[in-house]
Each structure stands twice: as C-alpha cells, then as structure tokens.
Length: 238
Image 1 (tube, rainbow, N blue to C red):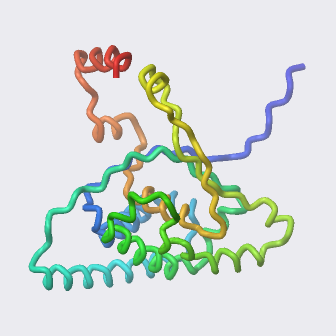
Image 2: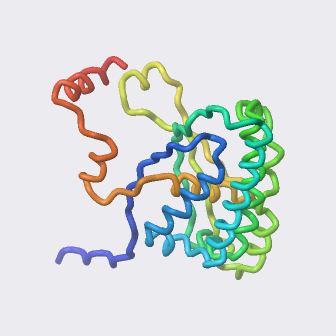
C-alpha cells in the first residue's frame, strides 16, 4: 500500500511588497505605518501576539515624537528635503516556535521606545551607517535585559529550542552575477539582542500585503510585450 500521508501541521504563507514613501528620518511616520498595517491585517496581530498595551504604547510614542519633530522644525526654520526610504535587503529571518513566544511580552512598548531613540540618533549621524569596522555602540543593549529575564524563566527543555537568526546575502541566479559578483551569505545571531525582531517589524509594517495577482499588478503594473522581450534577453547581458 502507498505510504500514509504525513499529518498536517498547519502554517501560513503571505506575500508583502515593501512600499514606503516615507523620508528616512520620519520615524513617527514609520510608527504610524506599522500601527496602520497591524490594524488592517488582523492576521499580523494573531501572528505576533502583542498584548493590547503594546499598541497603546506605540501610539503614545508616535504622538510624542511628532511633537518633538515639530518643535525641531520650528527651531530650524522649516523642514528640508529628505531622501525617501529605499530597500535593497537580501535577508531571511528564522525563529523557532519557542523563540517566537518572545513576542507576547508586554515590554515591547518601552523597548521599542529605546530602539527608536537610538535609531534616530543613527540616522542623524549618517557617517556611522557606513562604518563596518565595529558594532555601532547604541545598539548593543536595547532589550537585552528583557530577553535575558524571559530566557532564564523558561523551562530547560523549552530553552534548548529557542533559536533565532538571520541569513544575510544572496546567490543571484543570473549569468552576470555568477561570473562577475563574488556574492556570499553569512549568518547573524546576536543574543540576547532582539534587534532582528524590531527591524523585521519595521519592514513588515511598511509593506503592502497582497491577496491576489490583481493586487500585485496594481502595485507593479505588468509591462508591455516589447518590454517583456527586452527584459528576457537583457537578463543574459546585465
């Protein structure tokens, strides 16, 4: 007889397209985008499992930052043009089921506040973004105490199954990249710093989550036949 089918284990597959028109320094706008996305996409609330107090803390933080930025603009005599947020990120984030329960803690509001303050400092000092000789000092301790307390409180059997890491880099599957690019991938797993979680939430909140091909076509209109032909042959060159 044929082998029995494996039991269903459940799962969720969703597609999101990063689509942000926010300036790089508009931190309140990014917080608003996260809150709005989580309001519209109820499955995100279920997936992350944040307590209601976390959303209240994010709303209060957004209002506070807007007041501060308005005061700074008044002092500086108006806002200057800012480049828009762009994304060229090749990363895969992995977390075990046991590690994912970290999301249910009520302390995400204060931790996000500390993270946002340090992120704003990094954006203000842009030269630090392009220096890779050492780990940026502001991001060494955000949330580490909370993570350690949570981890220490787990049962030993559960603790052994706490895993989260990010794979950065890629292997582009086209002829030019195979010949000319020395691309590689490396693994980032900094414990007990939950920065990976916070960066991921920021990306999730600024993405458009699509349900159908029509949704994708509205965001990325399909090209003409001539454009598709040029793209098809151009991939062999570029």
